[in-house]
Image 1 (cartoon, rainbow, N blue to C red):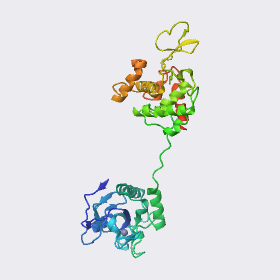
Image 2 (cartoon, protein in one colour):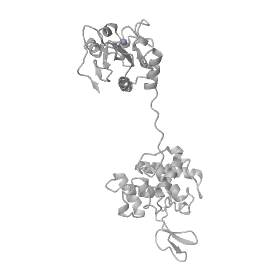
Image 3 (cartoon, rainbow, N blue to C red):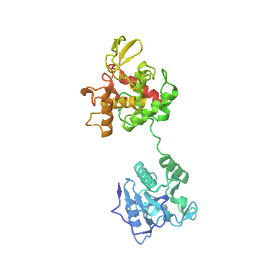
Image 4 (cartoon, rainbow, N blue to C red):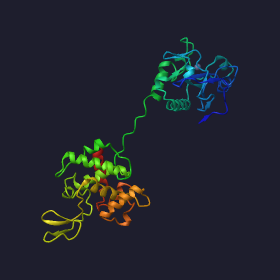
Length: 372
Ligand SMILES: [Zn+2]
């Protein structure tokens, strides 16, 4: 992007102050004439950069050297602006003798040249922590006032236009795009799609759970899912869908079953002992399904590890992910054909649950939790 080889200027001296400003100029001649003059030892002038109308950028002097572009000058009371600034000359023909020699006077600024200038300014603003207010025109710093008018012509001149261009182009940081709503194509492994403080307050508290309980459960999901790269919003969305916002019988203590894990709908008459492990009684009948005893970490690990097993094969999983998958599948195995079958929410439809609209329902909950 920057040619720092073909045009080098001997006109510089060691820099003793930190770089805190950028000064924009126009050269006034043609690119060839300006570059030759800025590199001519007899001229005693130079700039760090030269940007042509074709958006080529030449570096004439290294940043760590003082270039001679601003002359007698001051910025915010500090004299000798060269000492603490980067000088950028722009190709823009205005000198009468150059025009008399047959070169057209430039009155416009090509978009590509302005983009190159903006790009170069941003690079230097980032590198040296230069604020927008310290990107200045030569005319604003030259002494005595009125000694220089460059750069001229909109949008880099007059001074009000230059300030407006700098503020609009370099001022405010770009506004981050609004977060995308959840859809079935959302990956299960992703950073949290919304902040914990917002999501935790939106998890419904059904059954015997209080609002504080729901919030504590949500916070544990952020910790456990976040540690293995699962988007906690999606795990909580699945919890909300499967348990009706913590209101289902299976979600209550001591079962704490977050997502119908091992719940098959099978029942057994209450008379006699449980038919085996993985059966729970509601006082009238035995129901098949897993009881975890507590949410944090037991039930949440079983849930998040099971989601991970749908999203990743063991080959694709990191060691901490594999360890959590192993703990979760010890509760209930997962058919081999389901391993890695759901990198996105869509893969859960027809697998985690038979419902073909399962993924849409989980995504809807996720948007509700994320406030979208
Ligand atoms: Zn100048």
